[in-house]
Length: 219
Image (tube, rainbow, N blue to C red; front, side, top):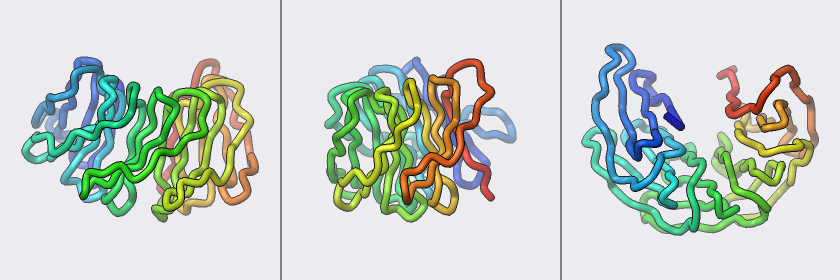
């Protein structure tokens, strides 16, 4: 199992695995409600839409897939990346998605029209994590080039390059108020950033191995 995500209502979980499938689980009963099949390689990232009706998945087969979680039907296959997709995230309004891939790019997608809205280039290594800001105007990406980048999604401009990690940045996350960000990396540290200035606020040390995932508390 390579990725998991909660449904917005907290009643279900979706998982993506190396066996090319996604599964939707009832957390109260532990039952698998349905298996979503279609990818031709391992599913590296899954994300639930804000309204809980759809899910997005990114896989080693270079595709992003959009699913109806009630029926298990694949609604759309988004193609464009030239390598495996490591991370996917929804915009807060559920109308767009962002993906990061081994081809060193971040792509923005309109899930209503099925079009690629833009390709964000600048990273010098595979993009391992992406996250959409709470206001929907910006995105974060963390990559194997040891940097975090802050993007303006409307223009595709890179607003800041956050330097400091000494190894792959495996995970990025926005604070609920959109003013700060967290990043976790293979250098065994977690870093806290001011996204308005690009300044590093704190380095959290204590892990003795790579940090693969970071998340904020709701408050």
